Length: 277
Image (cartoon, rainbow, N blue to C red; front, side, top):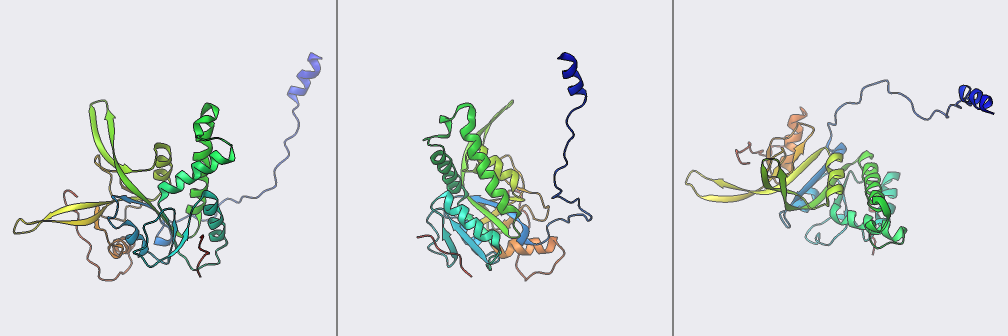
């Protein structure tokens, strides 16, 4: 018996090759040059103008997970559940539509819908009801799966979130930092997925007469005071919270001409889808 088992171990069953469905690339994939291929997170205080900014993008479709767009003329699908979001994504994948930018407003509510979907599917009231963290893993896995699929589509993907301050502890002390309102793990998923993280903020400007005024800006570079980042390297640290200024900065960095929109220099501080009723 032992000898037979030894022979079997030395002569394992031959591996049957799987049917080939993947081919290796023959050309390099180039960096994203068009905004239609950009995945971005825009977050900031309530009513600062995030949705208005996104509404000026190229042929946007809003996937509205919460009210607050009544001031805008827009194409939208009201997303009232994760299942509605999945069905809308399936229509977007087919490509029989004119939209070039997908706006999820807000991604915070989309995550809560995903969480509720997983709980209902597993007949639980909270992801923590499943042992060994399985519930949270299922939620985060589903959330990551759908966002990744959307990011892979040939459209721009803009995720809108609110902002909050959290306490950061280090070996030398602690400090406050402004971050998106997504819960910890889902925030990490989104930050790891997007090309740029844009923080919508108010900046104080002092004129030559020492009068102080405020302006709405977008911050694009990392800071200990707030979450931001630009993997493309195309954007200046500070821009007006105006979509034309964003597109001009992108076009200039990409070596393309753009309309004459003023872009501020950095400061030291600085066909319709069905509507779900």
